[in-house]
Each structure stands twice: as structure tokens, then as C-alpha cells.
Amino acid sequence: MTIIDEDSVNKLKNTLNGWRALFASAPMEITLTGMYREGGEGEEGEYEQNFFEQVEILTQLDALISLVLDV
Image (tube, rainbow, N blue to C red; front, side, top):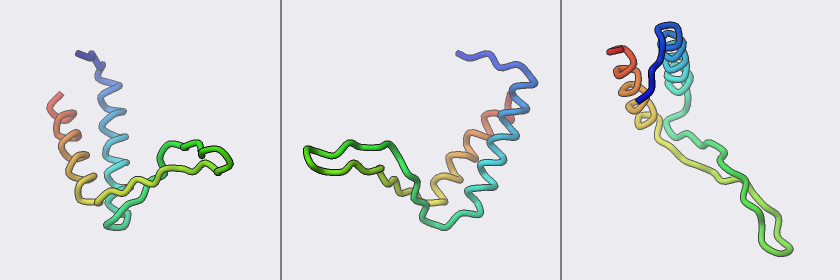
């Protein structure tokens, strides 16, 4: 259980709404760079590529925003 004061709740709401606006303007398939993976012996490392559907991200953000709005 986390206790978040009213000022922090408002900041969280603003942040989540900003993320939603950002992802709403993104392409339908979103590629985000993940963790760096070391290469094997004699191989170069590389960053993970994570693929997401825009609608799935927006659905999850909407659910989180609705939880915060109930606070």
C-alpha cells in the first residue's frame, strides 16, 4: 500500500495524461529500446528491441488513469 498526497496525485495524473498523449501520436506499432545485452566472446553487445501495439499501451494507460482519477 502506498500513500500518495494530493499534490503527488495531481502530478501523477498530469504525467500519465502526458504519456497517453505521447503514445496516442505514435505509430500503430511502437519499438522501444530495452536493456543492453553483452555479446559473447568476440561479439559486440546490442540493445534489446521491444515491440508494442499502440492500442495495448493506450488501454493500459487508460486503466491506470482511471485508477488515479478515483483517488
